[in-house]
Image 1 (cartoon, rainbow, N blue to C red):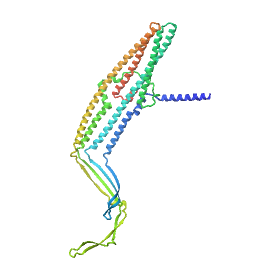
Image 2: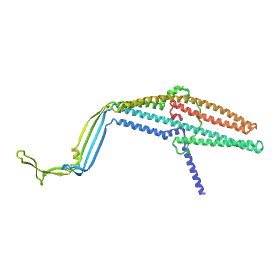
Image 3: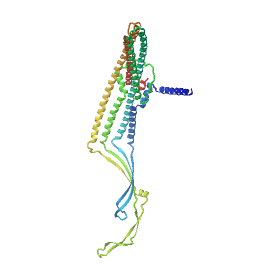
Image 4: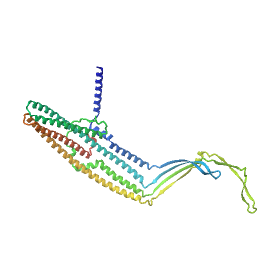
Length: 482
């Protein structure tokens, strides 16, 4: 009894936990879009491009600062070296240390740095526009995937309802056949219909699962099995206010707001900046510099002299008139250790400073060719802008036409569904009184189910195409989810 109580408590706990887990995974459309804009890999990659553009702008600003470099060196010379005390070459090891500081600042570079800074600002704007475009694309994909799940859910409901109705019809037909009121063929027909219904339900369930997985992948989620969307109720069909606008007005608004047009415009400015940078390299450059260096040695040094006890005198010459030798005292050096390192650094320090002027005279036409190359890039960017404008205009007109056609298709599908419902009701009444067989009733029911599915398909097709048209009209993606 106690074990049974523990088992029930554990089962209840697991059920409650599972219920809370499922509840947490019921995603609204707004939540899906917000999550995708943060976690989608494509969006994250584009955000990294923005960070790189920010780093490049920081580098362009830092280019105006002077350059300062310090260096130090310590060397060992091993082998045949000159002895500073004797002046003779002998095998020995000597050590030397040196240190230096170099500083330089550009005074004039043909405004190259100014152009580079302005270009980096434009590049940052372009990367932000690219991020906006990527976010918009991902959001539209999420909206489409979300509506696909809603459609598949409603389609599954339709198929399930039809399946349940046909199963009841099967039981009724079975009883009538056993009672001898209906032929056995009617039971076979309704049995085939129920089997077909089961197949339709399985297909609808599979489509629903696949659509959930597709959306979960867009959201970068790993828990596909428990992922589901919140039931946001019936999506009302209303004609969008954007449809009251003329296509030309929508095109004009799209060119003012769409990121791809802003990117194309910015690319023209970037190419123009690159051309100015290339032209600036025709001009001379002037740089100011300052150098400081010092050194120290670790060899013994001569600190004094004493008379040479072995050879106190040496002949240094002769008197031409008398032929007498001229002698001079011989001295031997007194060796001491190396001087204090810091004192050597102080005594041996040196400075140099000045201006360096560089005038480009001939460089294999590299600067000229670079200028010509950037002229081509400017023209290419201008043509790309024209192409983007034409493509956007084409997309807007296509979206406008598709939305109108989708609305008409939905209205026609709803009208067809209404007639199919009336036809099904009439067929059922005839079947009840024995004026219609099961096979003919099944055909009418199949047409009714197909009409329901088509009405659902055209409904959500119209909703999504309306979202796209509103998007081109400049309505933010965050408002499209409401």
